[in-house]
Length: 443
Ligand SMILES: [Zn+2]
Image (cartoon, rainbow, N blue to C red):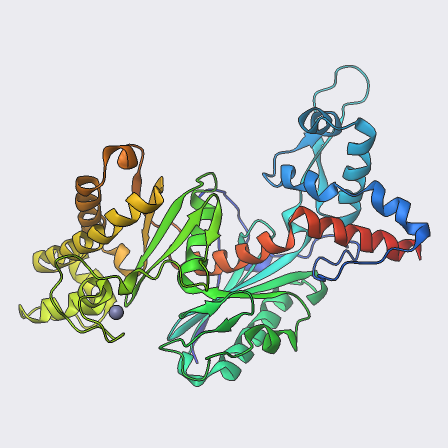
């Protein structure tokens, strides 16, 4: 198998300059365990100490924007007593999640120290498993990739082979970064099929033979005793794009256009999965005015059957233009082939017809178009815009942006890591971890 190891040098919004050779272990940290979900039972002697820092997790939420603040600024922001803020800051400092970050201007006397969230305190693994390719990235607690390994693989080899590769790759990434497995707070995995998110088991995935109902977290946890969260690839791409490019947007629709078509819905700032995790399955919505083309699901006229990569290839073949893969279509459009550009634009219009309905239902403020075909210049997105702005009511489209994805091939790994970070760094979980740590050191 061929593999590439490549460092990330720059990110969309936040600049960072980790080089592969420069990825370094941070200073030793206390053994704060963010990975257990069982509520601790502090001893009576440790109870008072633990309850004194209860609320530290809430304070951390405020600091996760990475802006440095002094104790006095935090007291003003939260309305809490300085002594309470002081105890919480101390607890977070001891955990390593907070670190000193320079000094504020002095108002006489010693200048006060500023503190900021320390994303290097722990590491996360995000894995994006496609039909023929897998990527695994080691990220910090902001979801920024420190390093990544991508390799060709075949999802039809089954869960044992593919998940053993994820485990082995995680070990390699930790080793290269000089990080210990105890610093890992969790592993997020995206797969190309429907998943019951609560159990992490794929549910009747059409292109993943052998994976139906498989205990993905159980397999990975044999080697790493940390939370393992699983979701479908479009949901994790939506999370990645939202976290990195649109963190302040509350209502966002991410649409992947590739061999299949699907959507990830961010509603009220959170991923909306629906009752059984099937929300966003746009590919099998009937496209208005579509020809009665047979779809892989057995229906006719599905959006995926008339506007996906294979559908565009088929339309081009009928006019003697050869494009066997999605990459061929992108290359043709980029090289100025008019027929290919027109076919992609028409696919964009067809997708736009379905999205116009979504806009009326969900009222997003941003629609992000991602997936391989979004790389075909402006053609696809121009078709989508043409119909959505033409069809939807002005109130819903007044402030609506329809933009291309910016995280590209990284969206999946960043999103998988983001899913874990959102799970592990909730105020409640941070409080419990700190209470456990205090109880342990008191006993
Ligand atoms: Zn279908």
